[in-house]
Amino acid sequence: MKLTRRHALVMGAGAALANCITLPAFASLGDDAIAAFTGGAEVGDTGITLTAPAIAENGNTVPVSVDAPGAAEIMVLAMGNPTPAVGTFKFGELAGSQAASTRIRLAGTQDVVAIAKMADGTFVKASSNVKVTIGGCGG
Amino acid sequence: MASGVKPRVKVPKTAAAGDVVTIKTLISHKMESGQRKDDDGNIIPRSIINRFTCDFNGKNVIDVTMEPAISTNPYFEFEAIVPEAGDFKFTWYDDDGSVYEESKTIKIG
Image (cartoon, rainbow over all chains, first blue to last red):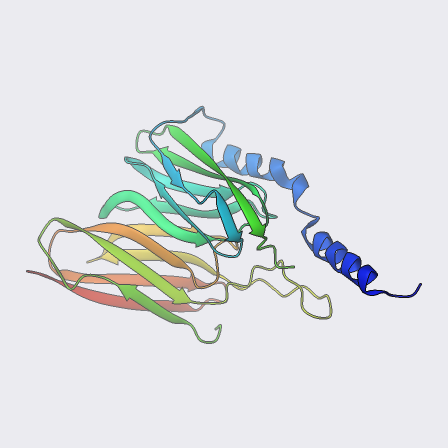
């Protein structure tokens, strides 16, 4: 087969896809991580705020912030990443607020989830869908 | 130790006792995720900072567990209560065992 410019483009797109192909099947991994964190306890949905952009042009650095007054720990998950866990913030006695901001990598368009463990042992969750134009999957 | 690691921290120089101050930290680190491949198709091994802590006069402010999904040059912004004058101590723990430290003094004024 003669390699035309068009073929080269198609193959390039295919190669880029192949790098990300390991992603979709991992939604359950994220659920497993949530179960491990909450221990199967019921998860509410009030008292936590997750701020993430609706559209991220570059998945390599997506600014997110979480705020959950009264939380002891907040775990952030990117449900569509090869490894869903992003990080866990534990607040000490001198924390001025139970809030933090950071920048994360997203492999593609997906839900970002934050789960807070409150001081009284209950859990609350917030999620936000982020559309990613260029994935940070390392292709 | 990863090359070119340089912590940068922004803390107000003074605060009133009991004030809540905003702290911004950034450390230059490539945070190799372990997902990328080099030109020959070999996986580049993971090399990240896996934990960050901030303490004030020995009392914990925040303790962050970090996974490969944290971006290159990890950035954190958070708030701390300043009950008295003293030192903030920031510590980053690298996968390779290196520990990077930075401290900032804050005065009551």
